[in-house]
Image (tube, rainbow, N blue to C red; front, side, top):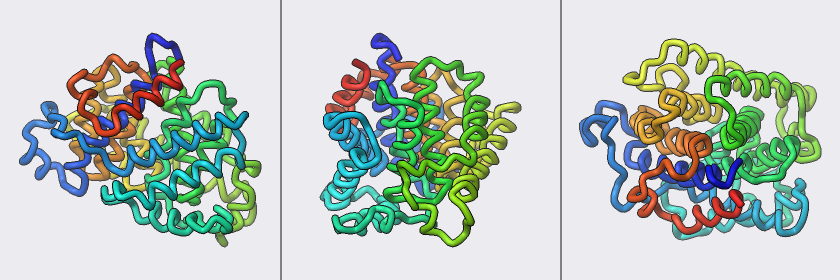
Length: 338
């Protein structure tokens, strides 16, 4: 990614803007959203622009990554310790009052006990979107190998959401952010993600995950465990490709790629919102926020994709200037754009 584009700054600011735009519309159907906001193409950023646990946990992950990087080359133990500590700090924080997900809260409560192996805290039955809504930093850190990026994306997911689809969707989300930051053409993005899913379909990252797969009773091998996740992601990527063949910007994207409460649907619906308006980032955010599903998570991911693709300068200064946690978001952007 180039310094002039400042993809990391763009992605992190876009993520938070989408989160704040979607916060008031989450849990509402589209008619009730429109009744309150007026035409979706004219939605305004709330004053003040308050974010949810999506941005809070993104920053927690970013802090953990920064601490790990200060200690040397990234690896599973070096990353898991500080990220775990940041997630526990978030769990205890008085600012953790933005309707956080049950899976994150349950897992973080179990992670509090330091003697507990993190794999024993992982919620292996949950594929909620709480793991990939926060994974964007993994796609933005410069200098990591593909193996490190994939392992880190899946590890940070597994600390809370250990379902194989949550792992695969987090890996794919980080991959999408990384590709866009590096300048991948949007027309080929879905195909590249599909190829990546097929290439990794039976690759279990044992160095990063250990024996996590054995915490379930549904799989005979680590390969069959992780393949379950990739197959669900491949299924929703096919639905996304179908939706984009006959784009319908005025139709709720949730009707074709899902409401986003689960990991693979959050990824696909956010990608749909972004790819409907690849050069109009505010429209992508507004479309994502005006959805019947998990609007803040869909919009935060759409914002991360748009910002990684277009860079920091696409966001209006008056919007960026009032976003909650602005200084910390900009600090991480500057760090990873350098």
